[in-house]
Length: 416
Ligand SMILES: [Zn+2]
Image 1 (tube, rainbow, N blue to C red):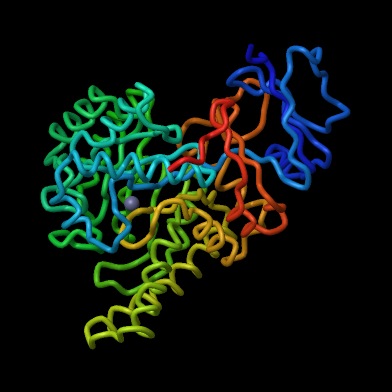
Image 2: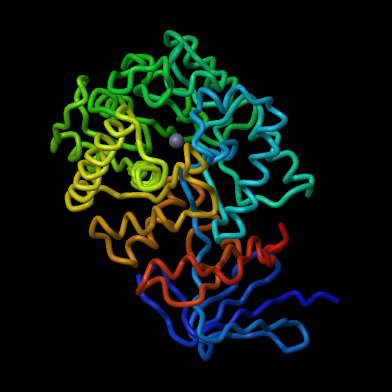
């Protein structure tokens, strides 16, 4: 008979609420939920016959990681979204299942998918609910809402005018969306204008107003100042990328917009490694096969963009913005299962290890509106936990060494 309770003991536990590490700690689970956590000696433990004890000596227990920005259908092989979109939905759904499992096994127990083609991610959820495949907790938009020809418009939900914008929200809600992703500027999509606002303020406001009527949240992709301003005016809940570029691509820091982001409590997902990995990729090519003149220009621009963006993110942090960790993998060459790259990048702009952990757990959970269920080790939350070899509160890179993953109280299989 399976015992009703599980006691997980470890040398350390990361307490998210107090930002402290507790030594000689344990977490008590009852089936899928957390019952108690703290120093072993302080726990009220049920009689031995009801309990299964697992001990991890010289390891750290912490909440499962929450990646607030993924694209599960992407291959991470460098192909642009415009080309990814040409693959059949069936292939993309299988890829999403593979990515979801890889991310889960690496310690990510919840993901917010910020845009997929047609029904692919909804189909993945259906398969996961049927027990066909293992995934992290899935927070889905299904398709992002875009303008015609705008960034990610190939995924299937372009909308024009306030009426169509509201209709697009209602359609996605009917299909099971947990939130709405909207592209407020262009991006890597070939037919889009990277630094221009896409939707009008009125259209964007119609989207957020409609989403909030469903008690759901809005995540806006913003590659430029125009988009950020529209997104703030429209009262979106999270801004991704949040780049301070003018229409012509020149950088121009806008302190006033940062203040408005702080005042409105908007989360910012800075996607640092999403840029840095492209710099690394080209650097690698430069050393091995060499770069064409065109590629070299791209490389120089990306390197400069990364330095600018890293400086900007550091400044936003200092001015009080709540940064939330999201990888944007498996977009371009950023493979899934490597969320720690983003966390290391966040540390490199001046965040403490503990602040990075909080941005990848409780703050990410708040941004995804799942903090009532997960994001910290607290009574009645789901038992989404990871056991790490080392101490990530002192060295975030120890998160490359996740030894065990628990989702809803069950150990995640390491089988491929
Ligand atoms: Zn993205």
